[in-house]
Length: 473
Image (tube, rainbow, N blue to C red; front, side, top):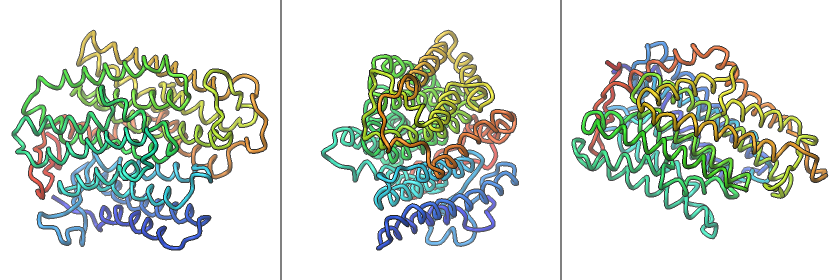
């Protein structure tokens, strides 16, 4: 296996962790955001350099560069290929948007430090070439739920769900790789972290409390989908191929069930959470189709869902802070008259999530639905129905927030600040640009599709390296 020109992956994990430790010192609160943005920007640059080298190598798996193997008994700690390289760039971008758009009320040292820790842990999961790193990264990425306020019920439900997924993952790596129990533990970890039925309540609840932005950042890592693509699908194809259609069926039913639950949801934050988790279940179903269309659609929609959910939640949180939480779900709030820029950005993100032509969501959803129909036949129609319901939900949410006469007049209800406008607009511009050149996005993800549809062996033993192919068959 070839190597990167420098220990870029090690740096991508260490840089945010070092900046998080720096926030623990006596850094003034008004400088904490600037310090965090600097750390995330440096991390993004390092990840971009890794992505460039992976693309130049044709998608081959590259180990970390010199000094990246220090203190490792089984080769490099980190390695990257076409499946994980794009994710290494995408997640720091989402973190930058989240931190830049965070309201001043949320911007304390704890928020910024935990955001940096989540980024460090998530990138460690993506780049792990050792199962110890993978399990530690997976577990550390849910730290915000562990250190949350125990008196808040939604935190407790979410904490038990994500900690159960970490336990299932640790058990899976201890068991022999040929054991069906290993596959069952992998699937349990993926189901719990995704929010498939019956674990949907814990994931939906995580987006219903005061730590909305931090919870969204944790969930936008989607390590559950990475676990599914990297371990579950290859192991299931080898040990129990007949299980995949049932797993895909469960994901489709969960997607539809959550979309139906949204019809009865009255709280705007609850409706937004239901849509996001339902869409995540759709991505889960796309990977299990084991078709080129379904997997490609899931990879593209991964980008769409990450960007759109970040923008939607950031706009909603900004409005929530500006109105002191006085957002009614049973009537129009009419915020568009006071915050037209927020309304425009929320509308574009909602339309992209619904598959508006001219955005990446259009191509991603088309491929995703085609793959579901090919793999599941008539039962695949569940996915278009669920996506249509979710499109209705985001339209209803936009109407509740921005349409109608202004319900309140407050000097604090001001439009997007420059840092909010720049960060949110840049994220949406990415989706629009890729929507006009979808072939470029498909080409970038084609090597990852070949890896997922191949059958890479799975590393079963703790402290063994993750064995994955440099090129898929």
